[in-house]
Image (cartoon, rainbow, N blue to C red; front, side, top):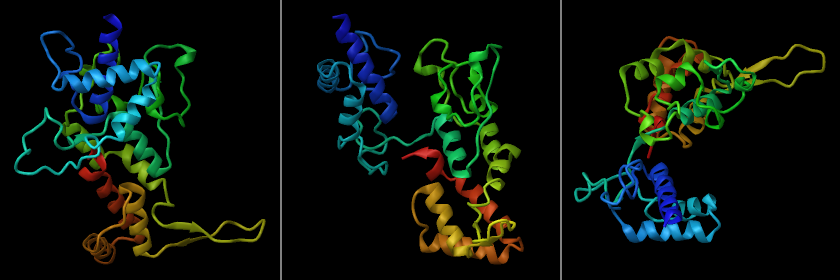
Length: 264
């Protein structure tokens, strides 16, 4: 019986991580008088976990390949308010670790970490991704601000993904994000010229349209629409800023879009 409960609790958490709501809601409230929304589904996934030798990759593969997971986040009139039946994907913000890792990857920068526990093993190199931090005491100001849990209890409720004014201001107007953006001249369209050995490296700049396309692909993983290209080109030509300065503003704007910040 105990192993059944463990398997059910484990697959319920995986389902919660991937879809934003557990088959048993809340994922920390796993008890007999809080029944699952779909008992057959929970039992099936639990049996798959046990029969696979507790291979979590097997469970991830089942869920990620399911039609339920692949549903659009765009609702219709019939399921606008539905959360419990998984009739459409629930839009939710990226976790703190994933968000800062994505920003660092786009800007080709690293993050600094610290720990309140002065032990040698709590030192983490700056190129370490936040999602790989094994110790909850190792953190950064960004992770604290965006609700990363200290993992003192193991409850999912420790994480706070509710947006706040301080978070919005940090993404919009902080020196931390600004340094990351301006530090990646490649994203702004600068490319090295071919030079002879021993000569100082020279650089060229891509055309505004090439830069805009590169930004959208790097940040949103898609090409800009015609309307988006027109708006960005207009800002390039009419803002009165230098090309790379206009590019910085556009990158900053894209990093603050819901399309980037939210899972959808």
